[in-house]
Amino acid sequence: MKHISIIVICFLVGFVVYKKFESDNMYYDRIYSEERNDLTIAERGLMALEREHKLEIRKEEAVLRDYETGKISLEEYENYLQRKLEEENKENEDALEFIGNLYDPEKGMFSGAYKMAMSPKFKKEKQIKELDITINNLIQDLENENKEIIVIKLKQTTWVPVGDKEIDQEMTKFYEKKIKVILDNL
Amino acid sequence: MRDLDIKDYINHLPIVGLIAPPLIYLFFFGINSSAFSALGMSGDNMLLSVLIISLFIWVWSATYARSVNKFLKKQEKDNFKLVFGINSFAWSLGLIFWFIFDSLGMVMSNIFLAIGFLLIFIFILDNFVRVWLTSIAFDLEIKTSLNANKFVLIIETILYLPYALFSMSLGSAFI
Image (cartoon, rainbow over all chains, first blue to last red; front, side, top):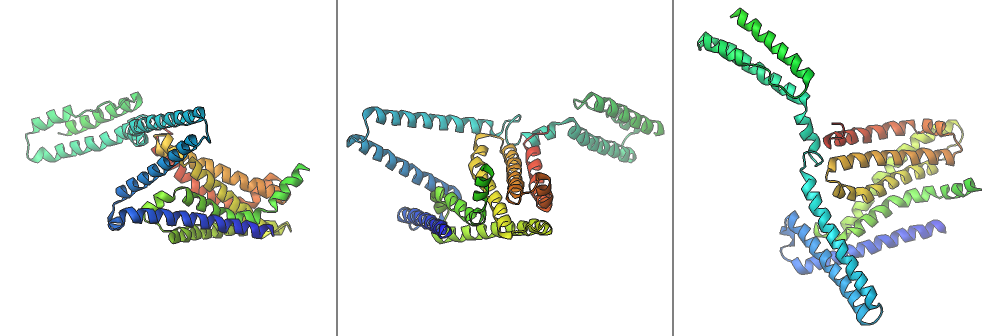
């Protein structure tokens, strides 16, 4: 018996939600009947917000009616309005703070990717690739360009610090050695 | 006496596990009906979605239950319905927290970090409930209950942790 009543409750909840969907759909059909299927996602979002706003207004009207008919006192009505104002202000402040922090490099949603791109290890890998390409291109240019110019360009090719003392010392020495070997061979 | 009370509730877990997933989704769709209706979802589609999602959770829970029940059979304590109920209930609890803490992403500007924390929290909660309820329902030690749920825990770890860690690393948790 208990189980049957639980299942009946489940069906009832389903029925209520189904009816709510029907009512919302009927509301949208009534207002946007012809062009409803052609609306974009953003427009549909705005449509939902408008519906929520109208439902909120209906709720406010119900509270006002309660006050007018004497069901709630002036103090209760004022408290309701005050609470609502505070909630709205807080929502606006939170929304502004959220948007402000969204792209913050320290705590925004892409802060991980930003910090990764700015990390010395990532910069090291990137610079190694760039320097190796530069050196290889200079060696290939030996056939076309003046040797002295290539030597000057090679001497100018050095490791640019990435902000990590250990990496910078190691890589500076590595490229100094590498370029020295190439220059000796030239 | 206290243990007996908990066991009384545990006996209802098979039916709770059966109705929890559709009820949770009905509430979810009910609360957000104006948004879903605006997106073009009709009442019929909503019911169909609830049915499909519930079927998925039931089948998943039944698969987990089969694995745990195999272990319990060796100890002559098998009860498929109860294990199914425990697993479906644990899943449903995770879903509830998913919906409740969904707003966390709106509070924390770092959405990736919020998702990572949420996944880890749900992973811990789900599996704690699963292991704890198995231990109480079948009078097992926690160690034995962990052993019974070992395949479930492995699958859950594979399902949750890589996504959680990936999401957290995107959210700069390790830098």
